[in-house]
Image (cartoon, rainbow, N blue to C red):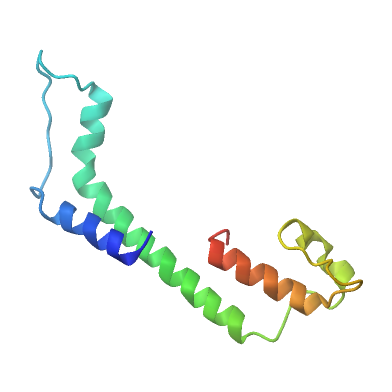
Length: 115
């Protein structure tokens, strides 16, 4: 989700009535109690979710910055990094360097949001 999309959602949320929302059932309503409960909580939940998304994106970006600067890795030999094969193709060479394997996995994981 882009910052523009978050801004648009936030702008829509900010235009709504503040305070607690309450819904009442009427014979003409197609909403059930769960629907009404969901809608009643949107005014509080949507801004909280927007803040959480922004926080997580900031943390991801900070991690990516750290990965780009790092020169220390969790394993010294390729055998110690074999478990990473599920996440990145480290076997393109006969014995790929463990450091490159780890860094490639870490960068891809941070970029795709899996860590």
